[in-house]
Length: 462
Length: 99
Image (cartoon, rainbow over all chains, first blue to last red; front, side, top):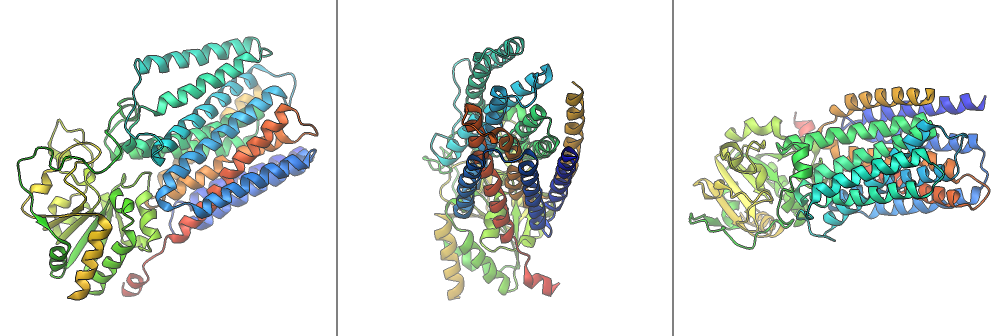
């Protein structure tokens, strides 16, 4: 009887996860969707405790309370600019949890005798979980600035990766043939741990959105693999949903950069993580016209429509709030203000939307690239703050550019193009932006927050 | 072996549902989607509870307890931060009135 109760409750939880994800698909219902998923998780946890009978309550309570407290504090304290790091780290925690459960199952199997298929899924679970853990830790270190964001390629890097995979397969076969030898699962874990590191270190800082999405997918697959080991459907279903979600986001990020996943993972593209370039102009002989915030404010006073293009430089300078203040001022003067959000603006999928939402920018003035690209030609000012590659017209024309083919925001069609930027430096891709030298372009150099604050001040004085 | 086949069935169908659902999520919500799905992958806690649920302090039990803690960081942290983020998304009241 208990087994039916357990199975039906897991089914209920799985259904709630699915409904929750469905509701997460619309801004109106997203919060409710998250609550449904929360409920599903609570139901799954409670029924597991009830049915299995709590044999050793102390350690379970300690584990849950310690984990819950840490998670709760992190969730409360975390800055929105640091979301990518947090998600990266949490992906890793999901991975290690799966590895620990699988290894514990290896030491004390729940059902005997242990069959071949359980052993195979156990290998998978150990492998995916551990790769997710170490890969996520590297991604976290890169995003947090604990290690340089530039790609690190070891000598014979791909050969090493290949050998590690071969090693995992060999250890796996040895394990299946002699499950009692404790060395094999440990060797699988060791090889997977090294592979997770060598897998992520050659990927540049600018490509991290793709990597986080991919590791997100892995953390789901790791949960699924654990579900295979335990023959537990709610683990399999929830894990598969996350796995699919991460894969889709990975693909979307790749599309937004016009790169293949293969190129992102093995191309070692990108320079250092810093947005500012040491050399200004990079040997360019052409001249640019420099303007001040006051000049920009004077222009703003004469226009009817403005599209703001925010980039990560805006978030680094913490200028979202003052930018919103400026947008409010313009709106109150009857100027039409919209925001154009490129899919790879920020450091993870959708990051820029969250950063602007935090600054109280209503989400219905945030426009996706495809929805706003036709509007630039009827717009007076395109105001680009801390972004570069995503508005670089070289992506359309210059065939030998690393940006070539990447979908960009058509800011060059606007009547006036205003760049707020720290320097003439190129973006991640290292491609000079010809738009800087255009006659209709105004370059306002400086820290985004300082410039926008100056703009607000000048607007007030008029 | 039979249970493996059933598991593969369940997994495959769930992946299809996942693809169907997530394709429709607008870019606006991609970050909350990731942190939310992060919390969902903390479902491993169910496996961890089973592993830790023993009246002894063997290595397997201790590993289970550690797994509970890590998975719970994911669950609580993931859901809470998602809720916090989604609470920030607001519609523009002025345009609603104006329109």
